[in-house]
Image (cartoon, rainbow, N blue to C red; front, top):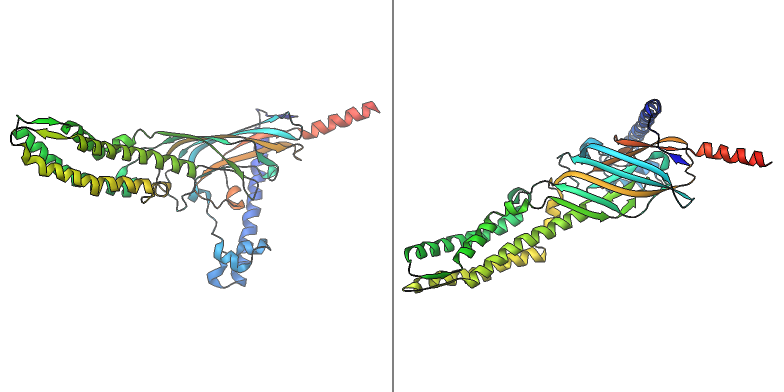
Length: 373
């Protein structure tokens, strides 16, 4: 039997004291290991060799080459004002409990070297006893993108297109204004489509949200991990490609439909030929570059600050019996790193409490057995 209480003040205080003591022990052990590493390995290598001391499967040389230094939560924190909600209930399967998890928060705006964005849930007492039950539901509010700042490759590509077209189109407009007897078709559409390309930042404001179902994985220390980088990057890449390609295709359509006739209109024909040539030499190659991945939008946006409010929810299964009784802290965070280790997990701050009542269930079973005797 499980339950979630509503008065935890005394237990929570004791839990916090216990956790702080545990963290001191973890960091003290880490410091001792680091000191030993510095005394037994060359100076250039010792900074990254601590894991080799605690894992016999990792050689010192491999640890030196592959292990990154520990990053503090402050350095990799993706979200602030984080709220974690955990609800433990009985399952129809007697071998498991159901655990519903939800995390919400606002982007910190802290720039991290690692572009990976992960949501993690961790309970020390449940390590090895948690498993995903389906996918995670991810809902993100996105901050406005700026083409020049966030996508310089696309900005330069679009600039090449508009630079070549704008002067020619303006010359045509000037000639048309001087010749009111000419019949002109498609010029307004061409100038309008060119304005759209020149003001793509306005269109980018429509990319305000992202939602998806994302796989939940279990990390080496029993944490549940939801990677939001890949799906978000693919979504933005597709949306931006579609947006820019559509705008460029509208320019091509407008040029192909442009016609000018009337007395002396042949003077404008060289300019019309110039536009047709630009379609072949500038506009269509730009579309091809976007479609062929020459400009890697997803990777560029991985380091951009695009997240606003973030909400992630998932369901997990907990082994029954879990081997614990009483209150258990379930921690959650959003981090900008793929290097999720025990030191990072033990530094998480935002949490909720679930309560196991396995001792009383065991006592009840024992009483029932005694009564039957």
